[in-house]
Length: 319
Image (cartoon, rainbow, N blue to C red; front, top):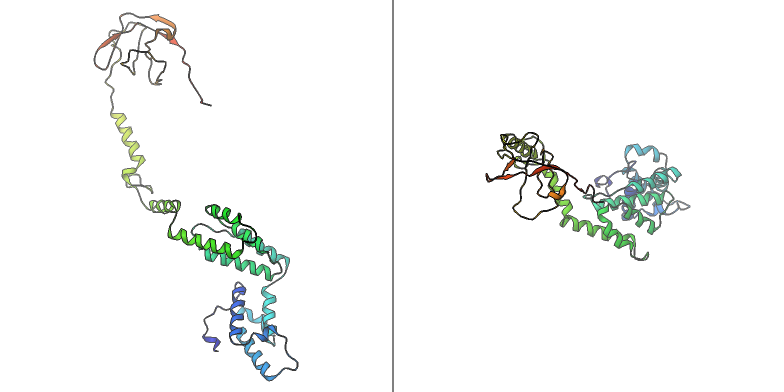
């Protein structure tokens, strides 16, 4: 085997677990793993020494330069392997706490790669186990389900309803990967709306200059047109003839009805100086007026009997 021709990531301070597995497989393929898994024979044969040197060299060729001080003084493949293991798999309480924090803080977000997320969690579980804190299967399942967003709540509830014997890591991974693939093929309405909203942010209104809408949908422009219309509007209706108004008596009409019956409903207009009432019984204080008329929309006139005040019963809050 020519190790220099193999395309394999070299060991650094962040990839020990993945590197260890690949090197183990490589040594097994080359028939050299026994120099790691077995004790050095006594006496040492030339054949063993030749294989051991080959295994040690293979390990050393697949580490970064900053790892060389760790293994430079090692004389056997087993010593080299154990030195790297001791350095990268610290069993201290601090390392276990750090790994547990990373597991608890790891979160999957909608749109992320589910397969990559599960691989990352598996790597943390493996590192924690190598650091002397192996988690049982049910706790690992709980950690994985905890890392999911609210959009996975339905699937999470369905999985949690299964018995402990059924709820294995393999089952959870399979269901999550299936769900992730389904969402990529058939995105939900919420995700579609997010994409629409994202595209809207790139639209610039040519009226107000703000993003998210076209000129025809611009509220600023629409409000400006309404204000302009209000400024141009000049009311032509006339309620009381000024010349015919007796001193001390005035009236203002803002709405009329053709029905002969009376109703108890009122439309209150804060801009009207006086309101019109056709029910004499409404008034608590009443003063008769004579000679006063109100001009209606069709040009006809009706007489005003009097003026006064009454009490309106209003509902301020439905509660």
